[in-house]
Amino acid sequence: MSEKPYDNMHDFVESVYNLCQTISRVANENTDRRSSSIALLIHLYIKKIALDNNIDVSGFKEPKSINLIPIFEYISHNNIELYDFENIKITDVDTSKREDLEKFALTHIYYITQTNL
Image 1 (cartoon, helix red, strand yellow):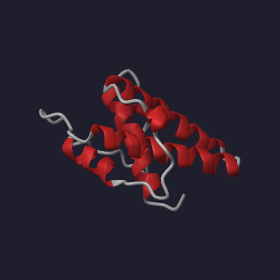
Image 2: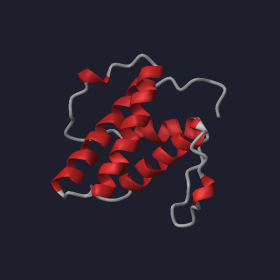
Image 3: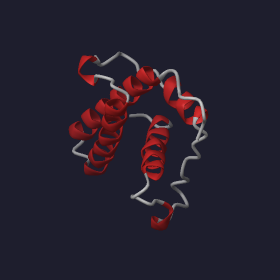
Image 4: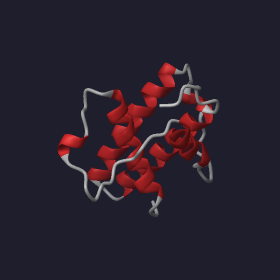
């Protein structure tokens, strides 16, 4: 993890929050329980990050397009190595470690952004 804090935390939270809302909406429209579960995981993750950084998500409006740049900058800034979902094992994720949960949520975000919602 980087020594210097990420300067664009508000934009990161807003981007992840908006992406989460989109995933949730699409999952509900398609009655996709797996995507709904992923959206919930991401929602809980970003809610905690927002709380830790005193960011109020209630004022966020759904944009026409989601700025993904802050997400990828955050991953790069913090040197987060995402999981390879093709080869992940249950033992790769330690749910007692905040870093592993963050990595798991961000890996889902990465994979989702590489496909069409």
